Length: 113
Image (tube, rainbow, N blue to C red; front, side, top):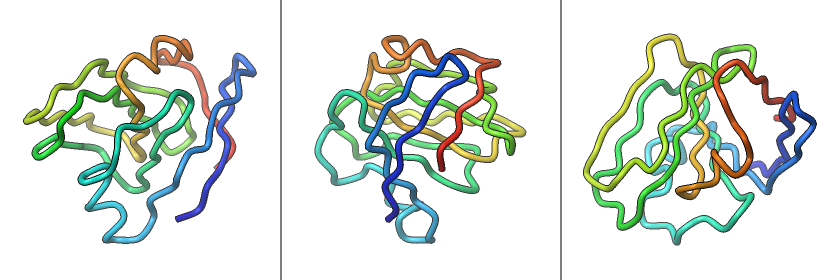
């Protein structure tokens, strides 16, 4: 997987962010991986839904459109849940609480991938 740093329209960089573009990487997501550190994330390409079945910790989920604009933020998604966002093209997964700390809100645009 590629590793990038992302930047919001508020000019707040964060990373490292792994980019899951291949089938297995996209399917696996964060399953079986240790909890993400602050500023760390996983960006899943060609994705509009995620689940936390089999995970042991909550995550923040940020849905992005094709242009990188945030269309929905789901904070503190607990294990054994599923969430989706029609029209999303990418999903950014972060440790729980990081979306708020990074001030990631609908309407902001992310770039850097």
